[in-house]
Each structure stands twice: as C-alpha cells, then as structure tokens.
Image 1 (cartoon, rainbow, N blue to C red):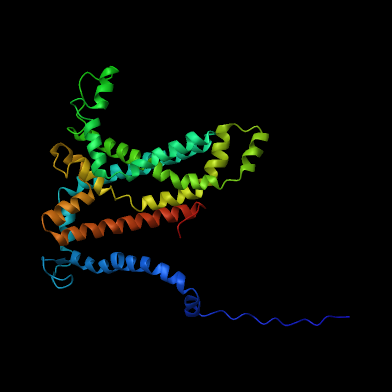
Image 2 (image 1 turned 135 degrees about the vertical axis):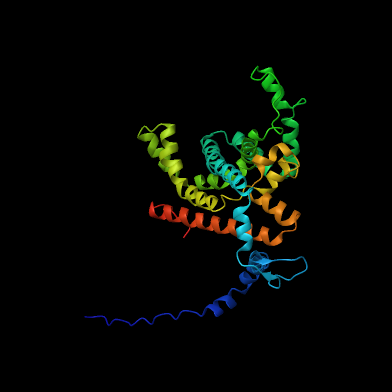
Length: 319
C-alpha cells in the first residue's frame, strides 16, 4: 500500500514593509538611534566639500570659492606635518601594542582567580578610572609626578634610583611614555570587560578534561582561554588598526595644559591637536577639514588592509 505524497505548498515570504509594520514597537525603539546616526554622522559628510574650497566664516558649505587640491598641497608642504605624523604614529603604535595587550593579560589573570570576592573587588576598582574625566586625570598626574613633593619622585629618590626629581612634564622625551601609561591605567579595566565576557562562555568541561590530561595552568591559559577569545582579540585589533591615527585628543590636550607647556609641543603635537590649532584656533577651516579628511581616508585604508590580512589568515574578519 503506497501513501500518496502530499504536496507541500511553499510559504510565501512576507514583504519587508509588512514585517516592519508587525514589528512597529521594535522599529520605534530603533528610531532614535537611526536619527542620531543620521544627524551627527551622515549630514556632516556634506561639510567635506570645504576641504576643496577656501571657506570663509559665514558661508554655507558649498558656497565658497572652489580651489581644488590647494589645501592638500599646503598640508603636504607644511614643515610641521612630519613631526605631527611621527608623534601620532608613535603614540598610537604604543597603545596598539602594549596598551592593547595589557587588558587581555589583565582579563586572563582575573579569570584565573579562584576567590570570587577579591575578583569582583578588583574588577570594580579597575573600572573606576574610566569614568574619571581626562581633566581630573591630568591634575592627578601633575600632582603625582611633580618635582616638588610628587609621590613618584619621592619614592624613586627614597629607593635610591634617582638623585634629583625627574621633570616628567618639563622634558618632551617622557611624553610618549606618559601618554601610554595614563591611557592604559584609565582604560585597563574597562577594555577588559569584553574579554572577561568572552571567557565566561568557555565550557568548564574543557578545563576539566585538560586537568585529567595533566595540563599545567599555563597550558590551559594558552590552549583554552586565549584560544577561546582569539576571535574577539582579532576583531578588536582590526578596529584599533582602523583608528591608529586617532591619538586621543582629550588626553593630549589635558596632559599638555591645552598645549601651553612649550617643552612638550615637539613630542605631543598629534594630528588631532594639529587640526584643532590650525583649523580652529587660526581660523583655517578648509585646511583643517582637508587634514581631517586625509586622516579618515588613511584610517579607512588601514582598516581594509588589516581586515584583508585577517581574512587571508583564516581569522574572523569584520567583513
């Protein structure tokens, strides 16, 4: 006896508009975010035309005299640009290497702690600096590193490591290190959150199996913990490469007291502060726009390169 096959009618796909109507409550929740993105990220794109004009205050973007690549010519011939690029790349590379690795190590160390009470306390304390403004952080650094009773100089002298106080803010050679240390201290706990979250998803049975096989703690950290968060590390690294020319404007301006400390200008002037000083302080809006546009293009190219390399290496890429 044969059973007749019942023909299944394929389900019709709903129109996208009908789906949106059915999910109207979710669409309303998303709407403010879309408007925010449109107003502050898409509408200002029109202002990029100022990079190809001689903008005058009072003109609407697009109404000023067109000058072609004149602003970019000024940019490439400015004697200050090589030093600005050197400082930006040096600070960004330090943050991309040492500053990027520190939160990973910190997260792994927290993950290995058995005492949950101490672990939670350390996590909470490490998050706090993120919520302190760079203005307050800079004031703290000025006090701690002062040559007149600063805690750091006093401890170094008491330990016999130095004979006289070090002028950390009076000598530009220390600034790159200061930028790295202060940024790492401020963002260490906050940047480790995503890694701690990724580690929470690791199956505990994998650690138990490793214990049975006789794996050491270091082997479990490397072959289980680090391997589990490797996709997260790669994705965040790609995104950081895409912002390598962003050297944290707020941090630089506060640590240099709005660039008023003359001894730091040679090593502290980065692209963002250069754009601010030339484009806004000197009123050369078109020149500042050209510099900002060039920086964004370079960042985008570096993002594509990093993403392509990760994709070719078989790692999780952004796209």
